[in-house]
Image (cartoon, rainbow, N blue to C red; front, side):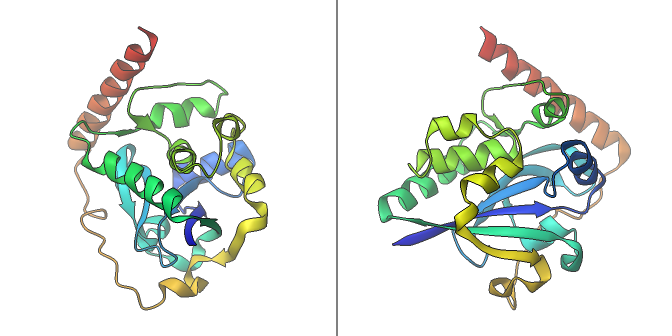
Length: 215
């Protein structure tokens, strides 16, 4: 028997706070981890700390969730037992996205439209929630019918309510104590012009892929 972990987090960002207020939810982000210590944790999110709208598939780490302040990030970690075949299928799905030559995009338009109860789909584009649920579906842990019922992150909590492993500040999550994580270039600041160009290109690609789903 193996285990995967679904992490719900309350990130200390302006965008995160807005989402939590508008959705009346304690959480605004979710990730899936193949290990208890978050050393193999993945999601769809921003590439850079300074630009919330441009992103894609990322390997996450605690400082990415907390922006360097673990004491102010509230998380819930759900431990989900899976058999070896399910674990392999989930890991293979994640690996296929990582190795895909065509960049899989963070569906930031869907995240924004969600606040106004409008659905926006695009090929090879995920929100954090749709990625986590799709990974679990590919592994046979949940069904497509379960995915259809997820309209808020709190719905993920309802599905796995009996699998709660940890609830509290990220700083108190003992499996990560003493772990060394690479922040790569997440905290490197980029200039305003680069950010604007990046957002325009990102949205153009999302709209193009959205059009492909309609054809």
